[in-house]
Length: 128
Image 1 (cartoon, rainbow, N blue to C red):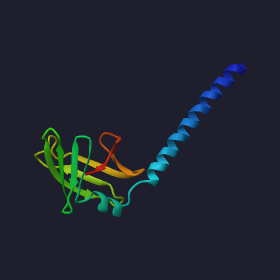
Image 2 (cartoon, rainbow, N blue to C red; image 1 turned 180 degrees about the vertical axis):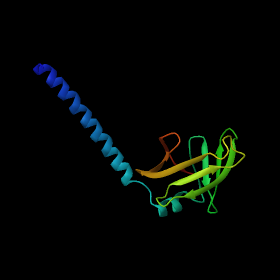
Image 3 (cartoon, helix red, strand yellow; image 1 turned 180 degrees about the horizontal axis):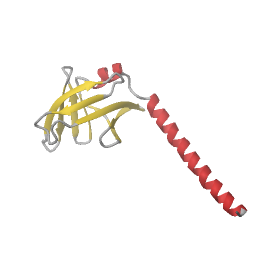
Image 4 (cartoon, one colour; image 1 turned 30 degrees about the vertical axis):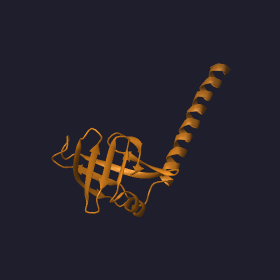
């Protein structure tokens, strides 16, 4: 094995390790900013919030409402897990009846974001 090949190989492995460690730091930062059960209740229960053209509301009675700017609207029920994650199940009026989606909320600077488990993405959670 040539010295050049070894340097390139170790450079690639080292670069991959740096990228992996960077991803872990981002994950650790996000985990540190996860909202507590109390914070989720006081911030997102009983008030409208949304992102873009979607508006959500989790009522104090365990129901949720969803509205889009195009007029689409439906609801359902939700349960909060012990870690503050909210799992909402669509009612029969929804385009996908009985589908459950879980929302995990995080602080992001002066604002909030949520993890949408079905899409595997983080989205802004703007209080309205």
